[in-house]
Image 1 (cartoon, rainbow, N blue to C red):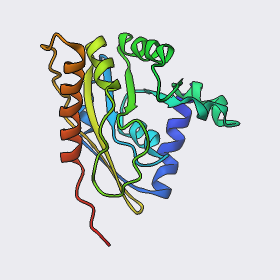
Image 2 (image 1 turned 30 degrees about the vertical axis):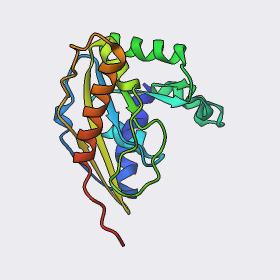
Image 3 (image 1 turned 60 degrees about the vertical axis):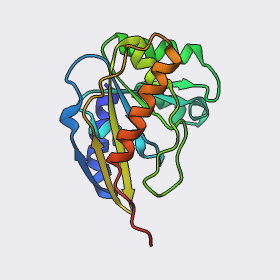
Length: 194
């Protein structure tokens, strides 16, 4: 219930701060497990991904955020769960797989951290989204978020068809991640140099 109220409030508040344009959100399947694989430039990105989705989104969030007063209390009510970055966090992986096995939507920032480069470059992707989609047979939907001053463009791409035929997991994850990186890079427009 809190999630619905917060999202409704964000839909009213965000347009007062940003000029948001969402393209392609109909590409998000109406049902079934989905990994929304987004680039990450700002602390606002979870909000933008949430606004682009017609379905509730669960997020993996760095565990440090759960120690911030008030925010740490609210995050679980906003479908977020902690992940220890930089290591194999089995509990977070189990939680993410549980979300996907329930046929829900999982949001992941595939660069692994915020990319402070203001160009349209995408950092090399972590393999988490590929691994989770592969293990749960979820759809992977690329989400490119671009911000130029107060103008935010959120482009939702067509679901990717993962290459499941590789027997070796690492090769499969690398192939899926490279495909996703190529798609995200193509979705982001070149940023004019000032």
